[in-house]
Length: 164
Image 1 (cartoon, one colour):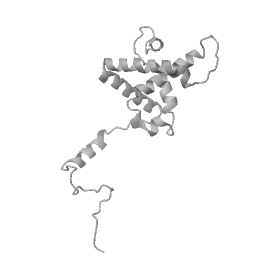
Image 2 (spheres, helix red, strand yellow):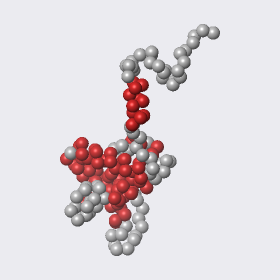
Image 3 (cartoon, helix red, strand yellow):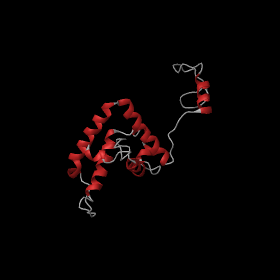
Image 4 (cartoon, one colour):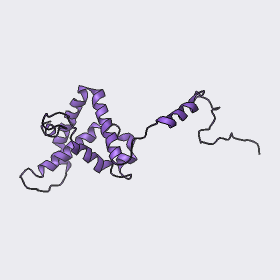
């Protein structure tokens, strides 16, 4: 957890665990930069941002710091055997952080997802305003349990005609 405390949202007060802008930048650039990337294609798997994804980002930052630990940039290969020990520690730290307040940490991770989508220009889909009202009006009077609803499952408005 020591490396993570160096990257709080507010470095002076050391508050805002995992809230440093670098994590938002990593998310946006790695998974949400354009419509062909997994964060956009598979949004349902990124909302909220998983603890494992956060641990991977922490591992990336830690790896980058180590490339500079001599005071000069020394490029290294990002290999599992070199990062696995710290990665597992980050996973454990994040699980501990999450267990401190599951609703709050979940909401923080949802906010990270929303921000990444917005940054990528792929705003989180929401049913609001007029669209929400139309959906409510459409649902009134329906149970969803019968075949007599106005539209069929395939989206057609016509009933099947068995006559030839």
